[in-house]
Figure 1 (tube, helix red, strand yellow):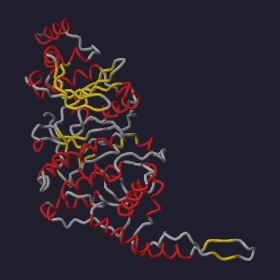
Figure 2 (cartoon, rainbow, N blue to C red):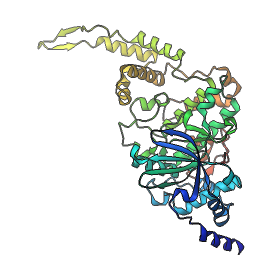
Figure 3 (cartoon, rainbow, N blue to C red):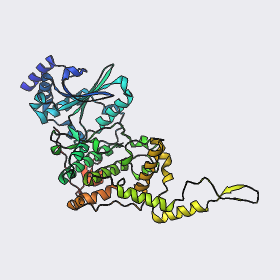
Figure 4 (cartoon, one colour):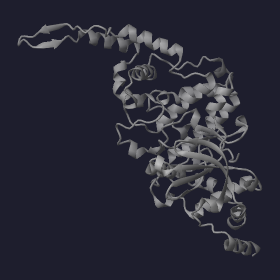
Length: 431
């Protein structure tokens, strides 16, 4: 009875349905600034904090409930996936469950303030929809968003850095126990995202965000869903390639759509970098091997002259014997033809130097002659990670394991496999 009275009193002095940012949150120091706008620290106002704790209920946990009852058949644009007022209230209350008094003393949120005049508004709202649909303990928290004529404000979980920052700071390498922890969390979050039939398309260390001020103590969550898209949409798009070239999967270099297995490959590249501090297919040894292999099997292209012969009808035809021999030699040595990737390279840039480097990277990623080198001493410290990186970097897209298979979970079916290859316990939220 007393709870109902308190809830009723709170509704008299606080409007939980208000669509104004200032009615719910107080903004703090600037955390970042860019062409889009700025990011500010944020926390609940006292009245919003009290309402969320008492009127909504601190014992409920909307995020965990949603992760457990994920329905991958629900389309992104379904009205049921929108951030309703009830969902927003429950998300605020859920944060109070983890922060308690710190909800009004600390700054547990980040408010991204986006100027509509500087961005593609439809694209930003689309990103919000996708991020909202993919909420999970290992995905960047989206509490709610506000919109007026000039700005879009996104209230998100506070992150203090990313794996790339730690990678640069730890000159001898990120501690192996942290690598194992973070990669489990990222694959677990990715498994949930994929269960929603969403492809992230930009998995890399800078998009693995950390949730604690002491970065090595933080949990890793997947951020930046700007390139994310539904699998069904990507299957019909033949010219849309997004992301970072170094993270592209073999099938993407061949011009095929970026589907969920491409994200798994990108996790493998990131894991390899976290352990060895170099890219598996773009390091001095591999680059030298590719250059030597290409030079050995491809004829020189400096000469403009060609050999010709006349047919009976006096037609001029190019002699194809020499390229044909080169192709046979190339296939025997296990190297792809760099020109196979020219069309994909020019989708990113027409700069001659970029195209050349892109083609060499593509040859390394797709050629059987270039194996993943796991001889680094740090892989010897963790056979689990050594085995995992080889699974993630499986060139054949048909045999590359899914994120769900790796974590031993099936979010779409709501059950977990007993044969867990890698422990993937869900981390708790909170900074």
